[in-house]
Image (cartoon, rainbow, N blue to C red; front, side, top):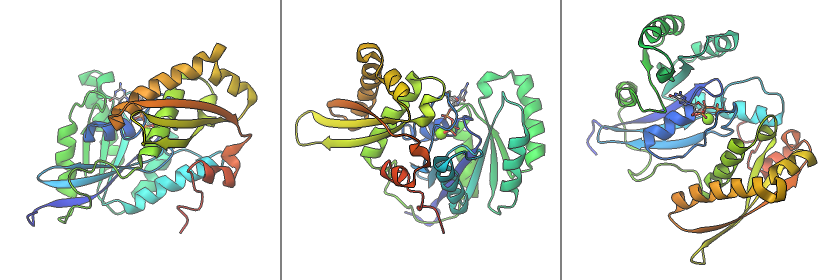
Length: 301
Ligand SMILES: Nc1nc2c(ncn2[C@@H]2O[C@H](COP(=O)(O)OP(=O)(O)OP(=O)(O)O)[C@@H](O)[C@H]2O)c(=O)[nH]1
Ligand SMILES: [Mg+2]
């Protein structure tokens, strides 16, 4: 590597559902973080690596900033906070098609005290007219007063290359943190669990998705077809019934969709068995949170 190579950590922060995970996936060209139209989809800090001849950007996708209502929410907000501290550059994402409200003001205040360069990313520009976009961009960039403002459509990829160029300008020179083939440091078991959770999020409505956790019980690569067993944990007997569905139809739908994604990731055929278990109020149990991969102690200093 020549000494003009740049490398650094870029955290993507913002309120739930603005499109942070969609943008990160688009940039690295792979589904690393799951996405859905339900708020609070992302629960962990998730790393994805973009490498070009010019430099390496280590993206940290974070849970959407919200007021935590339980221990899981507290864990999520700690994960987001830790990503703020680690960042060389911050991407603050807002939506072009939503009003800037009190909660956004709160987040903006929090970010203002941080010293690193900040880029305002206005997402979902596909959902507004060109005229509206000009007005919105002017208003939001005045409000935020960051180093840069970049409007994008994460879903369509509009202006995403431009965003990468802008980020590179603010990154320090340095050696890469990961080799150039690496796209994430998330273990496959964790990504597989997340893919199952994503399919459950897509298939289920109302409060059920928020109360779901997925645990991979087994992933056996020894046979030609990889054996995967996973448990979907929910909070109530009635939810369990809905997740299983009439004659097992809902669980089958979730399983079929998840199998497709996991096979794509592993480039192997899999045999997926899903189970459903009830764990009352697991989102407020430190013991269960830890068991399901959300270690509440992880981000304490
Ligand atoms: N129209 C439009 N929709 C988008 C765009 N980017 C993301 N979305 C949609 O917005 C919803 C939320 O996307 P996510 O990427 O899960 O949002 P997030 O900010 O990661 O959400 P949390 O993880 O809950 O904080 C999904 O339904 C996406 O398909 C975009 O550029 N245009
Ligand atoms: Mg997300």
